[in-house]
Every structure is written in C-alpha cells, then in structure tokens.
Amino acid sequence: MPHLKKALSRWDSVAIITAIVIGVGIFRVPAEVAKYLQSPILMLIAWFLGGMISLLGALCYAELSSSFPKTGGNYVYLRESYGKWAAFLFGWTELLVIRAGSIAAIAFISAEYLRSLLSIDTFFIKPLAILIVLVLSLINIFGLSCGKKIHNILTVINISVLVSIILFGIISQKGNISHFQPTTFVLDKNILSLLGVALIPILWTYGGWHENTFVAEETRDAARTLPQALTMGVSLITVLYLAANFLYIYLMPVTKMANSPLIGSDVFYILYGATGRKIFEMVAVVASLGSINAMIITGSRITYAMAKDNAVFAYIEKISARYGTPYRAIIINAVWASVLILLGTFAKLLFFTGILVWLFFALAVVGIFILRRKFPAIERPYRIWGYPATPAIFILVCAVLFVNTLIFNPVPSFAGLCLLASGIPVYFVSKLLKNKEKT
Image (tube, rainbow, N blue to C red; front, side, top):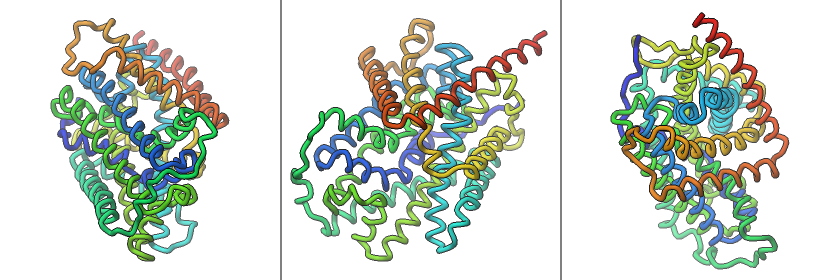
C-alpha cells in the first residue's frame, strides 16, 4: 500500500505555521482590540501575552509531537490519551466545523478582496471563493511537493510584504510618536477582565500555530523538526505582530484605530495614498491564499488519520500511488468547504468554531499528564520545559477562554457544541460497522 512521502523540511514546517497564522487577521483584529483596550501600552501588552500563550501551547505540543510523530496531530494525541472516542469527536468537529469552516471563511475574505481588486460585481464573491478552494485543493492532490512550493512562495511573499510595510511605515515618518502617550481612557472595569475579552480576537489571530503537527509523517526527522518549527514559528509570528501593532499605533491614535475595521487598508492609504488601497487588496489576497493552501495540506491529513481508525471514514484512506497524497480526503474537505460557502456567510462561519478550538486544546494538553503515566518508557526527544506548571497554566488559560467564549457568544457556541454532540451517535455506528467487519 502506498505511504505518505516525507517531503517536508524544517523550513517547510515553519512555513506551514506562518502561512496559516499570518493571514488577513492582523489587518483586521487590531481594530477590535482597540475597542476594548483604548490604551497603546495595554494593547501591546495584550498582543505580547497572546504570543506568550501561543508559545506555551507550542511548548506543550512540542512534547506531544516528538512523542507521537504521526499524521493527524490532535487526533493522534487524543486517541493515545483518552481512546478512539475522543479522537473521533475531534476529527468529526474538525471535518464539519473547525477546518472546513475556517477554509470557507478565509476563502470568503480572499474572494471579497479579489472582487474589489478586479472591480467586479458582488455576485461573484461566492463563485470566486469556491473556485479558490477547488484550485488550491487540485494543486495539493498532484503532490505535497507541488503544494508546498506554491505554499512556500506565498509564505515568503506574505512575510516579506508584512516586514516591508512595517519598515517603510516607520521610515516614512508619517506617524506620530505621541500616539504612544497615555490616553484619557479610564479603566472602569477590572484590567484582567478587559485583557481577557481582548485576548479572544487576539488569539484567533494567532490561531494555527500547531498546524505542522498534522503532517508529522510527511516531515523529515519529525521528532526533532516539529518542536523546533513550533517554537521558531510562534516566536517569529509574535515579533511580527508586535511590530505591526507598533506601526498601527504610530500611524494613528488608538481611538481612531477602534473605528477603523479595515485597518490595513487605512494604513496603506496613509502611507501611499489612494493607490495604497489597491496594494492592500493584493496583499490580502496573497495572505489568504497562503492560509487556505496550508490548511488544505494539514486538514486532509486529519481526515486521513480518522479513516485509519473508523469504518465510516475507511473509504477516505486511499493514498494516490502516483502522487503519495490522500487525494480522497482532500476532495471531501474541498467539497464540504464549498457547501459551507454556498450556505453561509463569513460571520456565520467564524462564530461557532472558537469554543471547540479551546476545548480540544485543553484536552490535548491534559493528555501530557496522562501520557507520561500511561507510557513512561516511550522516547521523548523533547520534554516540556517547566513541567508540570507550563501545561497547567496553558490548560487554565484554555478553560478561561472557553468560558469567555460561551458567555460573550452563547448562540454560536451552543451551535458548535451541538455539532460536537452529533458525532456521538456516528461514532457508535462506526464502532458497530468495524465489529461487523471483524466477525
């Protein structure tokens, strides 16, 4: 039977993380954060905390990925920690909600900017979004080496453009250092409460730092490469996000940022005038294409891992003998994401994913404690620094964010939890089918 090819290097692994994380979020979310923290210093502190929380998670996943360098990431860690039922529920929600929903949502953004760039009718947004998903999926079916080349090119362009914006923005001297002075904003609420609310959109922007673990079997020397890529990727992203927010504050006061939802577009206008908006649209399209491509690479591998353990998804396991890719999994993800695009909107797709992300992050990291007891003799090329405090802190943060999401977005959160619960009967059906196969 054909096997997945080991085509990814350390750089490829870092590129997957950065391409997924550094998408269009950094051009939109800072305006949302400014609504909660109308203080330049607090804003920068919040973005730094977001990076540190992501780094804590990366350190936890470094041990998990080095202990179990298998394709599927979270799916594998949950299966080894709790059993097949927990892994199935993760894969089920990833397939129906988290992965396909995220691909569809970013495809919407890409299509919106592409439509504006080409100056065509809004009617074409959904067709363009579906076309983007299908084309990038087709590229990845023809081989991971082909997909990763497109992916690496987009990543280099994306990071280069963001770095250029930061450097030229500061050199331009079109901002004012006085924007960093304390504002008249009065903290009439608890600072920790304000930071907690602001961290929800910030950590969404950092989301995806663990994606390289989903392609572990296709990574060379994965037990060592993945931990290095996790820490390198998150560190790079944190520096870039802090620099980007420094530039935003330098170019416009925080009070103005709060009323600038398309802050990237406004920054380009300040720096380059009317043509700046067109430049920003091109940047947004490239950034979103890189994110979608990386999520297609990693998401199809989760479906592939599910197919190994569950009869319901056994058909998906087929690997292309010629290209060494899980082409059926890629096709299924592409078709379902296209259906979500047809049925939904960007806002609807975005809201119900968050609560499940934090739930499974917490469960996966709790698994570190379970796995150390369950498999004490297993080889662990990387053991998490600061154990047991480091994973405990990350678990606590996940729990707080889970509760915050449920409180501030109850309806979409409940919808996400219902979709999670819908996987329970499907799991038992899968188990019955597998038992019949054995008999």
